Image 1 (tube, rainbow, N blue to C red):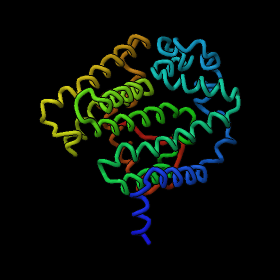
Image 2 (cartoon, one colour):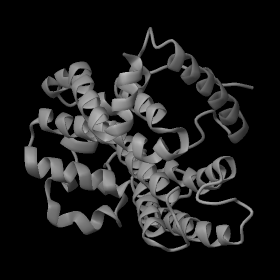
Image 3 (cartoon, helix red, strand yellow):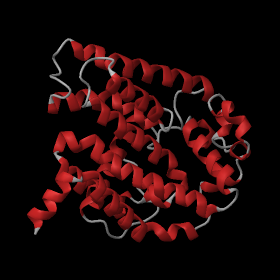
Image 4 (cartoon, rainbow, N blue to C red):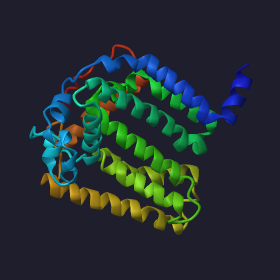
Amino acid sequence: MLTSIGEKIDKHPFGFSLIAVVLLTLLAYGGTVRNGFVWDDETFIVDNPFIHDLSLWPRYFTDSKSVSNVPVLSNMYRPLQTVSFAFDAALWKSWAGGFHLTSLLLHIGASLAIIFAFGTLLGTRAAVAASVVFSIHPALSEGALSLAARGNQLYTIFALISIGFFVRIAKPFDRSHTFSILAAILSFLSKEPAVILVILLPLIQALFELPWKLRSRQSLLLFVPYLVGAVLYLVLRSAVIEATWTIPAWGGGPWRTVLMQAKVFVIYLRLSVWPFLLYGRYPVPYSD
């Protein structure tokens, strides 16, 4: 029976995943459409005049207050998150359930993008399994549950699409390379951590030798556009928010932040294996 299911997955990976992910996501998170706006949703959406007027869209890319009028949050540069909220506001008005429905659809999209990104690298069955687990894993539920995590959803989807096209490149600047670069830029504009693609893509090439061996001279032509795109994004971000860092180091200083994030990483690993006793926020003491 398992062999038969595996064969069906191999023949119709996207169709199987689409059905499984949609059903499981709706089963797990369908009730969120009854939720309202909470926590940071208020400042990102309800009290944000920019998202209620689509004619202001150019300022989403040039005005830090388009993210939020709260000083700490306005130091974030995530224009595509604001664009997403603005389209939601135009479509759903003040109905929070519509915003949550969009988040559910994006969560499904991110789950399916895993297959596109890793089907070639890990095999169809492994990618489908990862897609299904991602769609319902409690430790990965923030995107489906919290509207304020919209930036996470967007940059994840675009980053996965970028990886998927990257491993399909036949030669520098072909269609797959171009689409991968464009998706990477969209990922940058969704949330700051997306710049990790500049490191992640060479690492993928080194480990899997896709699209070809890393030592090839053509590899330089592969990575220069991503690096240039990341640098231009960081320069634009710094110019708009008039700062280099979003907020002061969480740990009170760079080294203490590194130590604290090491603890956070261990917590995430534990939750990935044992996703129980989950909380909206986890207190993590500073490290010395």
